[in-house]
Amino acid sequence: MPVRRTTLWAGATLLLCGGLWWAWAAQAPGARAAVRLSPAAAQDATTVGARPAPPNAVDALQPDPTRSQRGVAQVRQALFERGSLRGVQPDGGFRLDAQGRLIPDRAVRRRFDQLLTTLGEASIEELGALLQQQARAELGGDDGAAQVMAVWERYLQLQRQLAPAGGTSSPPTADSLTLALQERARQRRLVLGNDWAEAFYGDEEAALQARLSSEAEAAASPAPGRDSQATTLPSVARAPQPGEDLAALQRQREATLGPEAAARLQALDQAQAAWAQKVTEARSQVTRLQGAAELSAVQRQQAIDQLIESRFAPQDRLRARAVLGLAPVGG
Image (cartoon, rainbow, N blue to C red; front, top):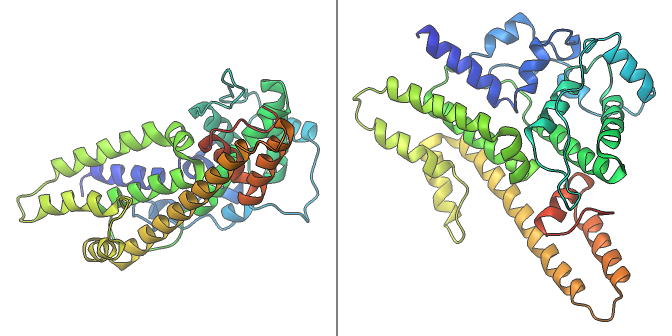
């Protein structure tokens, strides 16, 4: 395989492993052993799914209640004065709109990724506390900081789900990478919400898709059926349409993509359907509460807040409020 194509596959694989953080964690100056790739693992990055996660990387993203935690000032000093971020200013930043809502912005992800490259120097709990203090200072209050932390929790959830894992060592193809990109894009939107996924990954996904398409066109052969397969792949990998025969779609996926890829797509379909159903039910109840004449404005707001808390996990509440057109708590 020409060097240019090998480089494309390796770069594409890193981008598809949940985002650039895994690549940064392995390559950034000062990266800790907890997230550093071994030479063998780095070599395996040239194949889709073949690069295993660094042994402790996923564990490092999990809270550890048994570990003693340093104060924010100590962590800041350890990272920005003595550690791998010595002499570096915090990257990215946060902005609120006129209604006090956190604006989806790639700059937010840059701040998250910068902090995550220091895992091993600081625990995930310590990084969260530092991030909260930074957000509170930069946004001027607890409400903005709470919104930042809600997105942070969803971002960590995404990293845990999309961490590189062991798999087939088969050489990647344009079709397999395109399918992987589509799966990642759908999962990012499921976990982060469309606005945040677009802000964090939209340009990156579009650029990678353009490179894959260009490479596929350059390598195209006159073999019969190639154009048909390239057209069918996006069709069966997409989310199902309302009222579509799901069993028929799944059979098409299995025939075109194989049972493993079809099963992954089905799991995404089910998760997206569950989220949509939850939002639909919550919207109906919010509408009822908003029209409840027997409740005062304060009682109405309290009932809606309780509904959101009971229906959605903490990391999903900010996203749910945005989807339902509700102001953030305290907003």
